[in-house]
Amino acid sequence: MVMTRRRAALLVVAVCACAALPATTTANKFSINWKPNTNYSDWPAQHGPFYKGDWLVFYYTAGQADVMQVDAAGYNKCDATNAISNYSKGRTYAFELNETKTYYFICSYGYCFGGMRLEIKTEKLPPPSPPAAAKDKSAAAAFAASRASLFYAAAAVLLRMF
Image 1 (tube, rainbow, N blue to C red):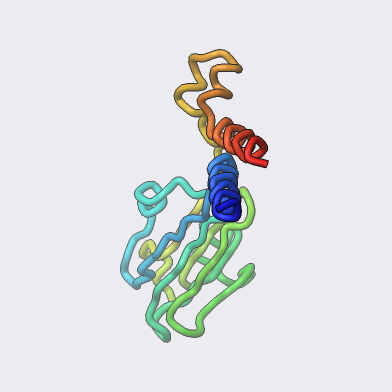
Image 2: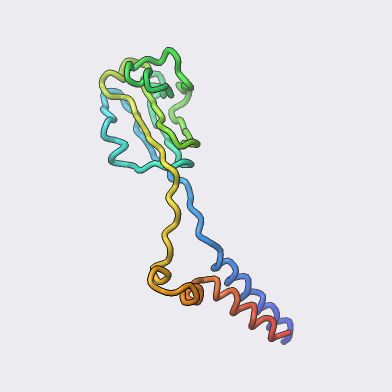
């Protein structure tokens, strides 16, 4: 009986401790059908915003397209001569947006001039919004409404049991 109560109390504390942890954010994955004779100039506005840590996954037909990361000059001229990176093997290419900056991608098979190029501006992830209840209440009331209070209540119950 005592062991069952202890296990139940420990389970309550563990669940409440997890509930008190701050929420984390995960990276987004953006799929791009990278096809010849397609203009991608509106694609970022339709799918953004883009944040540091997000992924772009290019899907293309091998032998008909490639993915070249270039600088702004290469993007504007559709010139892959000084490409930062290139990928032409396989049929997919996953690229992590690992910095807050503007990324440029083109196809070097000649389709860039028809719009097969992509400019992606990444931003820092915005801070999480405070809970709605915390916006109008005092600090003490906000703490009482937070999930952290569950953890402390469960700890108090556990301490009383032993």
